[in-house]
Length: 442
View 1: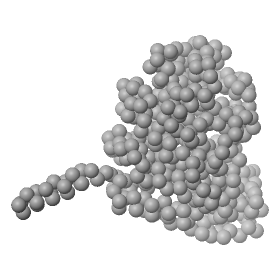
View 2: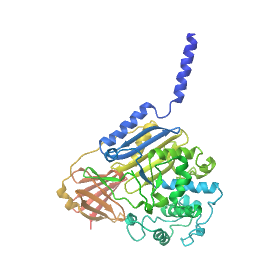
View 3: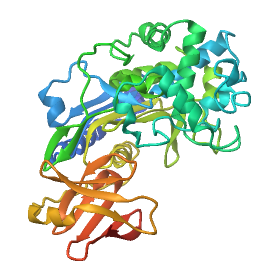
View 4: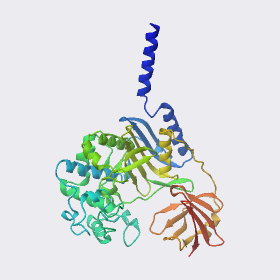
């Protein structure tokens, strides 16, 4: 009898062990402590959700602006993750024999350069050669902060021309995905927003996932923030309807994981259709699907960036693990934050970053101000003061607040950039990516 009891006990313990997932209670606590480290040091704001085998096992919303306004059904803009939804809508059309991915763009937009050579498949996998309407060809890319008509954007795409012949190279193209959305509208004879709702979000019960449209009213979408003088300030984002099928969606981390689980378990499109969308062995991009590797673990999904909100959503078929993080206040590299979370999950070494606090001498700000350049860099960098913060802006790029770390030395952690001013020599030393440049005031 005692032997039988011991055998049963061993069997029960083995069953319990095999049922124990990757996200153990210890890892849950480690992830919680990791997120709290950034929150306590006021470095990041956002939300993190992790699913295992289709069930949520981790959910943390963090940051003073997010917590103070509540977290119930709180939506975030997800930028280019929109492209994943756009590509899935094409997969559904293909399954219904309503479109061929080999169809030429000229069938829909004959005036676009190379339209008679570019096919839909190349538009989906970024090999079309089309450029990025987000960055206007004759000015800064900030032109999308104001509403633009469909005709204006399409004319910009036409005027930009192509970077290469279709299939010859790979270059990320928002222009291609904008046009893909317009093709969807022609196919379904509905707005992109309605197609998304009818084909994906309503069938899956995603009540907080939507595309921001012209004239729409939307509740509880989180603002984007940047840090200035130690405080989070609301950022001016682009006008999201301009981003359309390339980047206008909003969702929650929970619903992003719900969507990815449904996608990879055959509830949205057939498994063989999805398999054809995934990146090939040595590719980063498939048909709207990005590869997200971490050591020997491979996830599939997409990343998204707006001016101030940064997100990543990926599913690992090997262990049925789904992870989405969305950061709407970034004073530390979002990618490094994600690497830390994955390190905990997969038992890799990681260190909690230390954050320095230094009060700058504002009397030097006037000496720092100016436009700097170097023969070794293709851009100039403008330094100026705004609302008591020292700002930097590369030509044709968004501005950002510099963080003081010691006398005359500032950094910008999201880009791993450090600037050391030499105010009496009218120069500064720029360090980034292991390279060092000296820029002189012009």
